[in-house]
Length: 310
Image 1 (cartoon, rainbow, N blue to C red):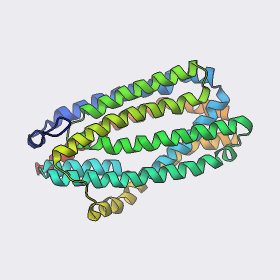
Image 2 (cartoon, helix red, strand yellow):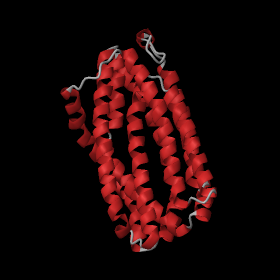
Image 3 (cartoon, rainbow, N blue to C red):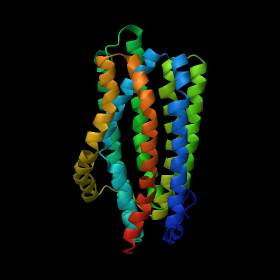
Image 4 (cartoon, rainbow, N blue to C red):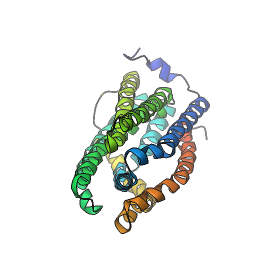
Protein backbone atom coordinates (compact mmCIF):
# COMPACT_ATOMS: atom_id res chain seq x y z
CA UNK A 1 0.00 0.00 0.00
CA UNK A 2 1.37 3.42 -0.96
CA UNK A 3 1.54 6.19 1.59
CA UNK A 4 -1.52 8.06 0.34
CA UNK A 5 -3.88 5.16 -0.38
CA UNK A 6 -3.05 3.49 -3.73
CA UNK A 7 -1.26 0.17 -4.04
CA UNK A 8 0.55 -1.50 -6.91
CA UNK A 9 -2.17 -4.16 -6.93
CA UNK A 10 -4.76 -1.44 -7.50
CA UNK A 11 -2.91 -0.23 -10.58
CA UNK A 12 -2.40 -3.75 -11.92
CA UNK A 13 -6.15 -4.33 -12.06
CA UNK A 14 -7.73 -3.46 -15.40
CA UNK A 15 -9.40 -0.03 -15.08
CA UNK A 16 -12.70 0.92 -16.67
CA UNK A 17 -11.97 3.14 -19.67
CA UNK A 18 -15.67 3.92 -20.07
CA UNK A 19 -15.99 5.07 -16.44
CA UNK A 20 -12.87 7.22 -16.68
CA UNK A 21 -14.06 8.82 -19.91
CA UNK A 22 -17.51 9.61 -18.51
CA UNK A 23 -16.04 11.08 -15.30
CA UNK A 24 -13.64 13.28 -17.26
CA UNK A 25 -16.42 14.44 -19.57
CA UNK A 26 -18.76 15.29 -16.68
CA UNK A 27 -15.95 17.05 -14.84
CA UNK A 28 -14.94 18.90 -17.98
CA UNK A 29 -18.44 20.23 -18.54
CA UNK A 30 -18.73 21.16 -14.85
CA UNK A 31 -15.60 23.27 -15.23
CA UNK A 32 -17.00 24.75 -18.43
CA UNK A 33 -20.08 25.77 -16.45
CA UNK A 34 -17.86 27.51 -13.90
CA UNK A 35 -16.08 29.24 -16.79
CA UNK A 36 -19.46 30.48 -18.05
CA UNK A 37 -20.15 32.03 -14.64
CA UNK A 38 -16.70 33.59 -14.49
CA UNK A 39 -16.58 34.66 -18.13
CA UNK A 40 -20.12 35.95 -18.63
CA UNK A 41 -22.17 36.32 -15.47
CA UNK A 42 -19.44 38.17 -13.55
CA UNK A 43 -18.98 40.77 -16.29
CA UNK A 44 -21.55 43.17 -14.76
CA UNK A 45 -19.58 43.04 -11.50
CA UNK A 46 -16.31 43.68 -13.35
CA UNK A 47 -17.79 46.68 -15.15
CA UNK A 48 -19.31 48.06 -11.96
CA UNK A 49 -16.33 47.67 -9.64
CA UNK A 50 -13.44 47.93 -12.12
CA UNK A 51 -14.86 50.01 -14.96
CA UNK A 52 -14.97 49.43 -18.72
CA UNK A 53 -11.64 51.22 -19.29
CA UNK A 54 -9.53 49.25 -16.81
CA UNK A 55 -11.33 45.98 -17.56
CA UNK A 56 -10.61 46.51 -21.27
CA UNK A 57 -6.92 46.99 -20.44
CA UNK A 58 -7.03 43.79 -18.41
CA UNK A 59 -8.59 41.86 -21.30
CA UNK A 60 -5.86 43.16 -23.60
CA UNK A 61 -3.17 42.06 -21.16
CA UNK A 62 -5.00 38.72 -20.98
CA UNK A 63 -4.47 38.37 -24.73
CA UNK A 64 -0.72 38.69 -24.16
CA UNK A 65 -1.00 36.19 -21.32
CA UNK A 66 -2.80 33.80 -23.66
CA UNK A 67 -0.02 34.04 -26.23
CA UNK A 68 2.47 33.47 -23.43
CA UNK A 69 0.72 30.16 -22.79
CA UNK A 70 2.25 28.84 -26.02
CA UNK A 71 5.42 28.29 -23.96
CA UNK A 72 3.66 25.09 -22.87
CA UNK A 73 4.60 23.71 -26.35
CA UNK A 74 1.63 21.31 -26.25
CA UNK A 75 3.47 18.75 -24.12
CA UNK A 76 0.39 18.12 -21.95
CA UNK A 77 -1.30 15.84 -24.51
CA UNK A 78 1.94 14.03 -25.24
CA UNK A 79 2.55 13.39 -21.54
CA UNK A 80 -0.90 11.85 -21.07
CA UNK A 81 -0.54 9.75 -24.22
CA UNK A 82 2.86 8.32 -23.24
CA UNK A 83 1.86 7.49 -19.66
CA UNK A 84 -1.48 5.94 -20.67
CA UNK A 85 0.14 3.88 -23.42
CA UNK A 86 2.79 2.49 -21.05
CA UNK A 87 0.07 1.80 -18.48
CA UNK A 88 -1.94 -0.11 -21.08
CA UNK A 89 1.11 -2.35 -21.52
CA UNK A 90 1.26 -2.77 -17.72
CA UNK A 91 4.74 -1.27 -17.77
CA UNK A 92 4.31 0.65 -14.53
CA UNK A 93 7.97 1.62 -14.24
CA UNK A 94 7.90 3.16 -17.72
CA UNK A 95 4.67 5.04 -16.96
CA UNK A 96 6.28 6.52 -13.84
CA UNK A 97 9.44 7.42 -15.74
CA UNK A 98 7.43 9.31 -18.37
CA UNK A 99 5.68 11.30 -15.65
CA UNK A 100 8.79 12.12 -13.60
CA UNK A 101 10.80 13.22 -16.63
CA UNK A 102 7.82 15.07 -18.04
CA UNK A 103 7.59 16.91 -14.72
CA UNK A 104 11.21 18.02 -15.07
CA UNK A 105 10.42 19.44 -18.51
CA UNK A 106 7.38 21.22 -17.06
CA UNK A 107 9.51 22.83 -14.34
CA UNK A 108 11.73 24.29 -17.05
CA UNK A 109 8.66 25.49 -18.98
CA UNK A 110 7.18 27.21 -15.90
CA UNK A 111 10.47 28.96 -15.10
CA UNK A 112 10.73 30.13 -18.72
CA UNK A 113 7.14 31.35 -18.66
CA UNK A 114 7.74 33.27 -15.44
CA UNK A 115 10.84 34.97 -16.85
CA UNK A 116 9.19 35.96 -20.14
CA UNK A 117 6.06 37.11 -18.33
CA UNK A 118 8.06 39.33 -15.97
CA UNK A 119 9.89 40.94 -18.89
CA UNK A 120 6.60 41.54 -20.73
CA UNK A 121 5.07 43.10 -17.61
CA UNK A 122 7.78 45.78 -17.58
CA UNK A 123 6.82 46.86 -21.11
CA UNK A 124 3.08 46.29 -20.78
CA UNK A 125 2.13 49.92 -19.95
CA UNK A 126 4.07 51.19 -22.98
CA UNK A 127 2.58 48.56 -25.29
CA UNK A 128 -1.00 49.38 -24.25
CA UNK A 129 -0.37 53.13 -23.82
CA UNK A 130 -1.24 53.14 -20.11
CA UNK A 131 -0.06 55.98 -17.89
CA UNK A 132 0.01 57.13 -14.25
CA UNK A 133 -1.43 54.91 -11.51
CA UNK A 134 -3.17 52.58 -13.96
CA UNK A 135 0.22 51.58 -15.38
CA UNK A 136 1.58 50.38 -12.03
CA UNK A 137 -1.66 48.57 -11.18
CA UNK A 138 -1.82 46.78 -14.53
CA UNK A 139 1.85 45.76 -14.34
CA UNK A 140 1.53 44.34 -10.82
CA UNK A 141 -1.71 42.48 -11.56
CA UNK A 142 -0.20 41.05 -14.75
CA UNK A 143 2.77 39.72 -12.76
CA UNK A 144 0.39 38.06 -10.30
CA UNK A 145 -1.53 36.53 -13.21
CA UNK A 146 1.73 35.20 -14.68
CA UNK A 147 2.48 33.48 -11.36
CA UNK A 148 -1.01 31.95 -11.33
CA UNK A 149 -0.58 30.82 -14.95
CA UNK A 150 2.76 29.15 -14.18
CA UNK A 151 1.14 27.20 -11.35
CA UNK A 152 -1.79 26.38 -13.64
CA UNK A 153 0.51 24.97 -16.32
CA UNK A 154 2.34 22.85 -13.74
CA UNK A 155 -1.07 21.66 -12.55
CA UNK A 156 -1.59 20.26 -16.06
CA UNK A 157 1.46 18.08 -15.48
CA UNK A 158 0.38 16.91 -12.02
CA UNK A 159 -3.17 16.27 -13.25
CA UNK A 160 -1.96 14.24 -16.22
CA UNK A 161 -0.92 11.18 -14.22
CA UNK A 162 -4.39 10.77 -12.73
CA UNK A 163 -5.95 11.13 -16.17
CA UNK A 164 -3.46 8.80 -17.85
CA UNK A 165 -3.89 6.09 -15.21
CA UNK A 166 -7.67 6.39 -15.68
CA UNK A 167 -8.19 7.66 -12.13
CA UNK A 168 -9.47 11.18 -12.78
CA UNK A 169 -11.82 11.64 -9.80
CA UNK A 170 -9.42 13.42 -7.43
CA UNK A 171 -7.93 15.84 -10.03
CA UNK A 172 -11.38 16.75 -11.37
CA UNK A 173 -12.86 17.23 -7.89
CA UNK A 174 -9.89 19.39 -6.93
CA UNK A 175 -10.31 21.47 -10.06
CA UNK A 176 -14.02 22.03 -9.50
CA UNK A 177 -13.59 23.00 -5.83
CA UNK A 178 -10.61 25.22 -6.67
CA UNK A 179 -12.44 27.05 -9.46
CA UNK A 180 -15.52 27.63 -7.28
CA UNK A 181 -13.33 28.95 -4.46
CA UNK A 182 -11.51 31.20 -6.92
CA UNK A 183 -14.79 32.69 -8.17
CA UNK A 184 -15.88 33.24 -4.57
CA UNK A 185 -12.64 35.01 -3.69
CA UNK A 186 -12.93 37.21 -6.79
CA UNK A 187 -16.48 38.28 -5.92
CA UNK A 188 -15.52 38.94 -2.29
CA UNK A 189 -12.55 41.10 -3.26
CA UNK A 190 -14.58 43.02 -5.84
CA UNK A 191 -17.29 43.87 -3.32
CA UNK A 192 -14.62 44.72 -0.73
CA UNK A 193 -13.13 47.34 -3.03
CA UNK A 194 -9.91 45.68 -4.23
CA UNK A 195 -10.68 46.49 -7.86
CA UNK A 196 -8.57 44.80 -10.51
CA UNK A 197 -6.58 42.87 -7.91
CA UNK A 198 -9.65 40.66 -7.42
CA UNK A 199 -9.29 38.86 -10.77
CA UNK A 200 -5.67 37.58 -10.63
CA UNK A 201 -5.93 36.95 -6.87
CA UNK A 202 -8.98 34.72 -7.36
CA UNK A 203 -7.15 32.83 -10.09
CA UNK A 204 -4.06 32.39 -7.90
CA UNK A 205 -6.13 31.05 -4.99
CA UNK A 206 -7.87 28.57 -7.32
CA UNK A 207 -4.64 27.31 -8.87
CA UNK A 208 -2.98 27.10 -5.45
CA UNK A 209 -5.68 24.81 -4.07
CA UNK A 210 -5.69 22.70 -7.23
CA UNK A 211 -1.90 22.42 -6.95
CA UNK A 212 -2.08 21.01 -3.41
CA UNK A 213 -4.70 18.41 -4.37
CA UNK A 214 -2.89 17.37 -7.55
CA UNK A 215 0.49 17.18 -5.82
CA UNK A 216 -0.77 14.83 -3.09
CA UNK A 217 -2.57 12.68 -5.66
CA UNK A 218 0.50 12.53 -7.93
CA UNK A 219 2.74 11.51 -5.01
CA UNK A 220 0.28 8.75 -4.17
CA UNK A 221 0.18 7.39 -7.72
CA UNK A 222 3.94 7.61 -8.33
CA UNK A 223 4.51 5.80 -5.03
CA UNK A 224 2.13 3.03 -6.12
CA UNK A 225 3.93 2.76 -9.45
CA UNK A 226 7.14 2.13 -7.53
CA UNK A 227 8.96 4.77 -9.54
CA UNK A 228 12.14 6.45 -8.40
CA UNK A 229 13.03 10.06 -9.10
CA UNK A 230 15.57 9.65 -11.87
CA UNK A 231 16.23 11.75 -14.96
CA UNK A 232 16.34 9.78 -18.21
CA UNK A 233 17.71 11.93 -21.01
CA UNK A 234 16.23 9.66 -23.68
CA UNK A 235 12.71 10.44 -22.44
CA UNK A 236 13.48 14.16 -22.04
CA UNK A 237 14.85 14.28 -25.59
CA UNK A 238 11.70 12.51 -26.79
CA UNK A 239 9.57 15.29 -25.28
CA UNK A 240 11.79 18.03 -26.63
CA UNK A 241 12.02 16.46 -30.08
CA UNK A 242 8.24 16.15 -30.45
CA UNK A 243 7.29 19.50 -28.88
CA UNK A 244 8.15 21.68 -31.92
CA UNK A 245 5.56 19.84 -34.03
CA UNK A 246 2.95 20.19 -31.28
CA UNK A 247 3.86 23.86 -30.91
CA UNK A 248 3.47 24.59 -34.63
CA UNK A 249 0.10 22.83 -34.66
CA UNK A 250 -1.37 25.42 -32.29
CA UNK A 251 0.69 28.59 -32.71
CA UNK A 252 -1.29 30.08 -35.61
CA UNK A 253 -4.69 29.65 -33.98
CA UNK A 254 -3.44 30.93 -30.62
CA UNK A 255 -1.77 34.04 -32.02
CA UNK A 256 -4.77 34.93 -34.21
CA UNK A 257 -7.22 34.66 -31.30
CA UNK A 258 -5.14 36.14 -28.48
CA UNK A 259 -3.74 39.05 -30.48
CA UNK A 260 -7.20 40.51 -31.17
CA UNK A 261 -7.76 42.26 -27.79
CA UNK A 262 -4.21 43.65 -27.86
CA UNK A 263 -4.62 45.11 -31.36
CA UNK A 264 -8.08 46.54 -30.60
CA UNK A 265 -6.75 48.29 -27.50
CA UNK A 266 -3.72 49.66 -29.32
CA UNK A 267 -5.67 50.86 -32.38
CA UNK A 268 -8.95 51.99 -30.79
CA UNK A 269 -9.62 52.00 -27.03
CA UNK A 270 -9.87 49.68 -24.00
CA UNK A 271 -13.64 50.23 -23.98
CA UNK A 272 -13.90 48.76 -27.50
CA UNK A 273 -11.88 45.75 -26.31
CA UNK A 274 -14.41 45.20 -23.54
CA UNK A 275 -17.30 45.27 -26.00
CA UNK A 276 -15.57 42.91 -28.43
CA UNK A 277 -14.43 40.37 -25.84
CA UNK A 278 -17.83 40.22 -24.14
CA UNK A 279 -19.48 39.33 -27.46
CA UNK A 280 -16.73 36.79 -28.27
CA UNK A 281 -17.02 34.92 -24.97
CA UNK A 282 -20.03 32.89 -26.14
CA UNK A 283 -18.08 31.48 -29.09
CA UNK A 284 -15.10 30.73 -26.84
CA UNK A 285 -17.32 28.72 -24.50
CA UNK A 286 -18.67 26.67 -27.42
CA UNK A 287 -15.14 25.80 -28.55
CA UNK A 288 -14.18 24.96 -24.97
CA UNK A 289 -17.16 22.63 -24.70
CA UNK A 290 -16.08 20.77 -27.82
CA UNK A 291 -12.52 20.38 -26.52
CA UNK A 292 -13.88 18.56 -23.46
CA UNK A 293 -14.71 15.58 -25.68
CA UNK A 294 -11.13 15.33 -26.96
CA UNK A 295 -9.68 15.67 -23.48
CA UNK A 296 -11.99 12.97 -22.13
CA UNK A 297 -11.15 10.25 -24.65
CA UNK A 298 -7.38 10.86 -25.03
CA UNK A 299 -6.18 8.84 -22.03
CA UNK A 300 -8.67 6.00 -22.55
CA UNK A 301 -7.80 5.65 -26.23
CA UNK A 302 -4.05 5.72 -25.52
CA UNK A 303 -4.52 3.05 -22.84
CA UNK A 304 -6.53 0.91 -25.29
CA UNK A 305 -3.75 1.15 -27.90
CA UNK A 306 -1.23 0.18 -25.22
CA UNK A 307 -3.15 -3.05 -24.57
CA UNK A 308 -2.66 -3.87 -28.29
CA UNK A 309 -6.46 -4.16 -28.58
CA UNK A 310 -6.55 -2.88 -32.18
